[in-house]
Image 1 (cartoon, rainbow, N blue to C red):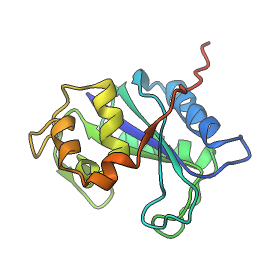
Image 2: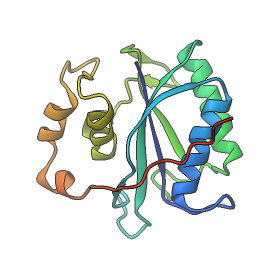
Image 3: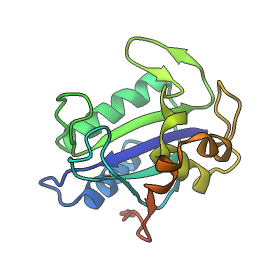
Image 4: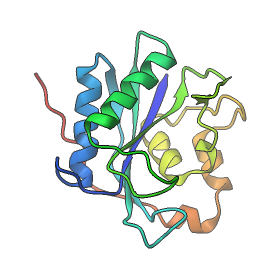
Length: 172
């Protein structure tokens, strides 16, 4: 399975953080990326600078018929279309789409590391995965999302909020 995580902590010309994420998923679908499952929205403080706006994130499971570099290229196009501007690491952003896991592949290149190198440390990645794919195992550590969540600090486990709001999908 292919797991993506989509986040936003800035409004854009397209609307709110919710709108940015919903639009990103609609663009993925329009790019022949089959979205199979979508988590609820999760909200967390911005890291490491808590003075920045809070982040919204969703986890999604997709099917894709090409390889991970093609998927990465599609993602970069969508981020650009939504107004993502590469700035300083961890600065606020309109949209951020990460490949968390691509069919359990383990790969390290200068453009992409699979699985995502910090996914096992991020509450905003693990909680959505637990919601939509409780049987997922980290390809390197061979541990499931619940185990990895239990390894997070108490602070990271309590500072995430699952919102009762879902992504708006446009159907053709």
